[in-house]
Structures are given as C-alpha cells and as structure tokens.
Image 1 (tube, rainbow, N blue to C red):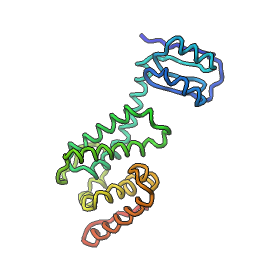
Image 2: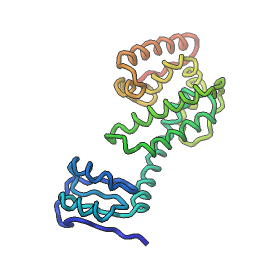
Image 3: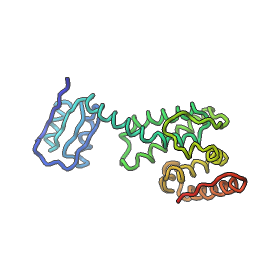
Image 4: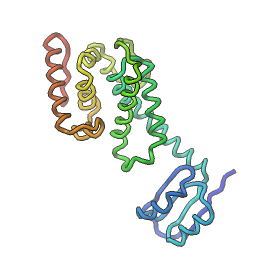
Length: 231
C-alpha cells in the first residue's frame, strides 16, 4: 500500500511542475531555482518538505516506486519508438548482428542512467544517437568487428527500404566516415548542425563529408549501383 503526501498550499496557482522519479529530494532546491511551483518525487524527508514549504514551493511525495514506475513505462515506450532508428545507425557502423544488439542494449542502459543530464527534451534523439555511435565505436575498438554479411537482423522495426540488398551494399561500399554522415542526413533526417553535434565535429567537416560521400555514391551509381536523393 502506498500513500501520497502533500506539503505546501494545495490551492496555490501552478504554472510550472518539476518531476523526478525515485528519490529526488536533492533536486528540490534546483527545481525552485528553475521556477517550479510544485515538485513531484519520492522519499522526501520531513525536514526537506518543511524547508520547501517555507521557500514557497509545494512538494508531492508520491513514493519511490510509484514515481519510478510511471517514468519506467514512459521510458520504455520512448525507446521502443526509437528502435528502428537505432538499428539503422548501428547497422551502418557494425557488421555483426550480435554487435548491433549489444550497442543498442548498451545505449538504452546509458539513456536510462543519464536521462537526467538531458537539458531539453527536443534534443533527445540527437543525444541518444551520439551515445549509440559512441557505443558502436567502443565495440569496434574492442576488436569485435567482422566482415559485413547480407543477412538481416530479425527485428520488427526495420524499414523495407533499408532491407533492400542493393541499398545496403551501397552503404557498405562507402568509407565509414562518409557512410554514417549520409545515413544520418538522408536516412534519419538530421540537419547538418545536428549531425555535427552527434559526431562532435564542425559543421564544415560534416558538409565536406557529405560532399565526398555523395561523390562516392555517384561513382557506385555509375558502376551499376543505386542512388537515393533527399527531397
């Protein structure tokens, strides 16, 4: 059985709410500094709640498990919506299905553990993709890379276009530094600025890699491959 404890004036007008799953009493003061009228979390100690009330903020203690379960369900739904994108990015870097699965699993774990470091929700996909690429590179550095095979990973989130054998061969024929940039730009719809943030490179470097990658694609196309243009 769980209880919800409210400290403060329940009738106070509310314009901004802060939420932290689990035990988040340490974030009461930062929430107030950010203009929150109400802060929802769990495991709030008596003196912490009283201090918050004296500072003019209402605190709702909905319990450790209660707040964490809501966030966990929302997080699971969010990551499931990104599985297709993660697969395509990881597959453009890694060759083995096992490595792709490991990179995605590691990325999900890091996102769960570090989600509080994300400053703005709209940057989530850029932030997540940077983590994924770093995990893929970790696997490459660990020496787990093998020769690319055409056998697709059995996962329900893949798009028909990406499963096209010729398209996959086209991507794999490119140098790795061009392949990932082209995939992020054409396949995932990231802007040059966003790709620069993901790869931690300058925008001019991204533009250069896009240009050189396109040249490689044209060469493959002229040799009998296919070319996909971004509208």
